[in-house]
Amino acid sequence: MITCVVHYTIDPRQIEAFERFAREWIRLVGAHGGVHHGYFLPAEGASDKAEALFSFPSLAAYEQYRSRFGTDPEFLAADRIRDESGCVLRYERTFMRPLLPD
Image (cartoon, rainbow, N blue to C red; front, side, top):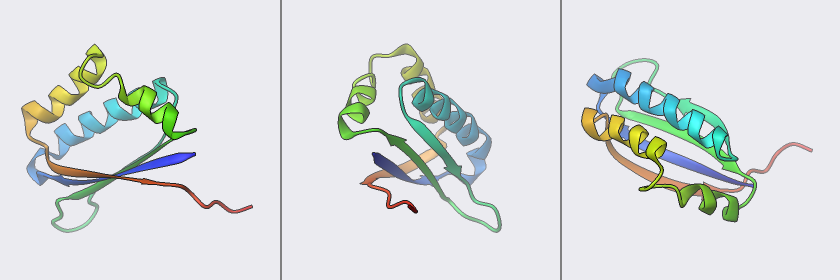
């Protein structure tokens, strides 16, 4: 299993747009073989940080999902939410492998 951790810098004034964007990606990851563990949004005080975690059975399975970027109409529509609202200022992806309890 491989888990993608996405660190976002968001525009706090666009939190509703970010939530729409996030809900679409939760749905798309699930529809294309992954398990989305959720988005984690600011809860108290002023913050411009958010996180997302989702997993695929393997890096090859993630790459198959990723191959749809830039061509799949649903993926393009989800990215349009981000692009048109400006809700995401910056993001960084890190791939990790989970160590789970026995």
